[in-house]
Image (cartoon, rainbow, N blue to C red; front, side):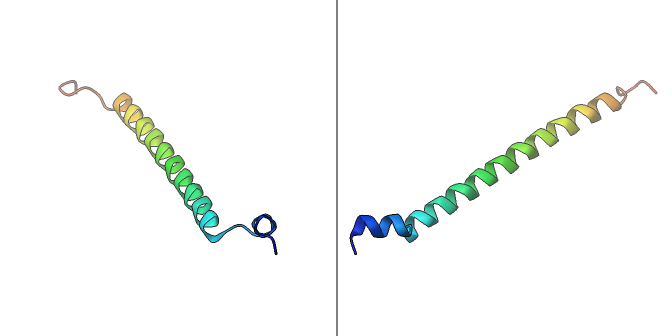
Length: 56
């Protein structure tokens, strides 16, 4: 079988691993971005709810 035909039929294990690693990295970066956004929202909402110190 011709090499180019084999490559078209099934991806090489290396290419599959690279694609999987890229997908995992993209997922990780998206999760980190969402976590930062949630932390920022929590920071802003708690700052708005807490009265300034000394004003009871």
